[in-house]
Structures are given as C-alpha cells and as structure tokens.
Image (tube, rainbow, N blue to C red; front, side, top):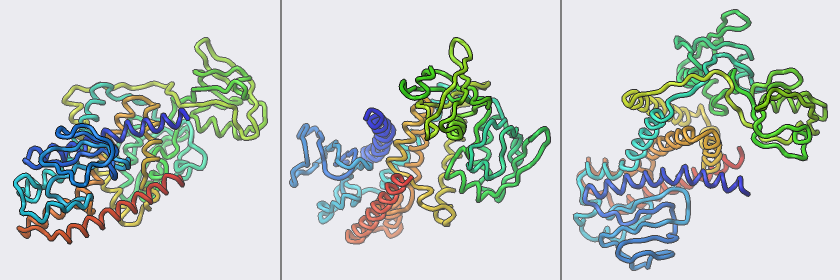
Length: 456
C-alpha cells in the first residue's frame, strides 16, 4: 500500500507542475493580448471544486447560468489527464458555442489579430520548452555532471539487445563511428545519435585486439525502444542491498541493508540483473556470497529458494571511479540548449519512424502508468535524475502538443493559419466537427496507451 501511494505521489509530483506550466502559458498569453481567460482547470471533465474572485470558493459544477463576465474560475476537474484554459470566443475541446452567435467582442479570441491568436495557441508549448530549458540549465549548474570514467563492459545481460548485437563482457569501448568514446554515458549518447544513420560502426578492444562491430541502424533503433541501455553494464557498478527480509535466506545468513555484493561462488557481480541471473541458476543450492560492509569484507553461505530468491531488495551502486564536471553559467546555458535540441530532434525522428511504420505504437506510446513507474525510478536515484526526467517530459509534452491534430495546440494553430489566409472565420459547424474529430482521436490514443501500460 505504501509503495502504491509513493508511486502515485511521484506521478502527481512529476505531471501536475507540467500541466500547470503549460496552461499558465495559455493563460498569460491571453492576459497579454487582452483576451479573457474564463476557466483555468487542472484536470478535464466535471468540476470538483474551484474559486473565482466574484463568487469565492465552491464545490461541484457551477450553475448552468454562470457567466464569466471577465473573471476566471480556477478549478480542479475530475479526470487527471491534462488541463485546459477556456478562452472567451474560442471553440475548443469544451465545445462551448454560447457566445459565438453574438458579434465578436474586443475581449474575445475571435476579435484578435492572427499574431495574437498564434501567441495564445502556442503559449503552452513555449512555456513547456522554457521550463525544460530552465531545469536542464539548473541541473548543470547545481550538480554538474557525474559519470563513470570506465569504457569497459563488466556484464552483458542475458538475452539482451547487447548480446544480440555481439557485445561481450570485458570489451573496451573505443569509438562509435568517428566519435571517440570518453565514458559509458558518452557511448550510449553516441549510439542514440548514430542509430538514425544508415549503419553504426562500433570500435572496441577485445582480448587485447582491436575489432569492429558493423551494426544496422534500423535494428539498433528497434532495440533501443525496448531497452535504452541495450543491456550493457559498465565496470564500476555493484548491487547494494536496500532491504533484507529477516525470515528469508538472506536474513537468516546475516545479510543486512547497506551490504554491497561483491561475488557469488567466486564470480564478480556487476549489477542487480547479474545477481538475479546468478541466483536463479542456483535454485535450492548452497551459494557462497562475498559482500562488503563498513567493517570489512565478509563471506556467507546462502541457499536461494526454489525460485532463485533470497529475500532482498537491491539497487545498483557506483563503486568505480567517477569523473565530475562543473559548469559556469555560460557553459550550463550552452549545454542546456544542446540537450534541448538533441532531445527534440530525437523526438521528431521517433515520430517519423512511427508514421513510417518502422516503430509500432505499442513500442513507442506510454501513458500514466509508465510515467509513474519512471518517475519513481528516477526519484529513487536522486533529485537531479527526477528533475531531468521532468525536463524531458515537459519537452515531450511540448512536442506532442505541437502536432497538427485537432484539439491539440498544433490543431488550433492550423485553424488560426487557415483563417489568417482566408481573412475570415470558419463556420462554427466546421470548427465543432474539427474539435470532435480531435477529441475522438485523443480518446482513442489514450485507450491505446493505457492498454500498452497494462500489458507491459
């Protein structure tokens, strides 16, 4: 129960600020252009409660006769799948046409110039991009960059993409194409960039001899979708115990939280997955585990149960040499811009692969459950990792909203541009049909991503 509440909590902590920032962009753009924002909602659907300066706080829906008349109702709505700002005189996903029959008023969206309309439509996207950039720069300034200095592979996960591609434990990573590899993180970034070419040349040193793996970019793209680390564990990692069940084999043998596992039956252990592999191969078999504790190195014999479990919670800890880089404000600003551009480019390339059919929607699309899972995992790593995830999520929200799909910001932009070219408004009927199509598409997409989340 506590774990479930923690996951829900991290999901709310990750997604609500991004919705708030996005809708704040629309709200501020409306204010700047002298347009009335009638509703500012976190969540969609029926109003749960809210406040406005004329009527104060109230529970439930507002009366059917309620009119904004220049005040904004700030509310929390039932469905936690986004938010919206209802701008006067704009037909959006609320399908409100109550004021359209009257002539355009100066404070309405439809009375504004094309440039002002574009600003209101793109306000949320601009704010999400700006928020992502501020987070990335702040992380670089606050913590800089910490990464394992190693270029050596300690372990390749069994049946992983890396094993299929031909990587082996002990390989030293030298170059990806013409890019000289500086660290394991640098290698993974180079692989992600090179995966959008025609092929990838990976130069490495194996058993003292230089060799090369010539890999298909298309295959790497497919494998990276399934596992973005390819199943490669760098040297300098060790599994560390977070929790030990007293009455299970590990507890009975004397293992305790904080212990770092060094080896199993003489085999050096490189990661949590490696430990799981070794224990599953020793079901119901006495196994010698060597571990490190604050008072030194110890050895115990543990017998995994019939499922290869010993009753521990484990995480990967860095034990190898770490290289730390600190940035000035100018360097952090430049690095943030580079990261922003790199991730945006990868997002659009991924969308292109989805449209071309190279990647399936099941491979690419994730919803609230996946977001909650990743949010929890990154929060466990630390604040910097969690904030970096929020930055990427904010940028993803911006890119997805920019797509020219009805009911999304990009879809609204299409209507604004068409009306700008025609120099007249489209009919209310056309706008309503357009929005209804968009809402239907979004609901269908939500069903798909929920299904994907539940079947992963």
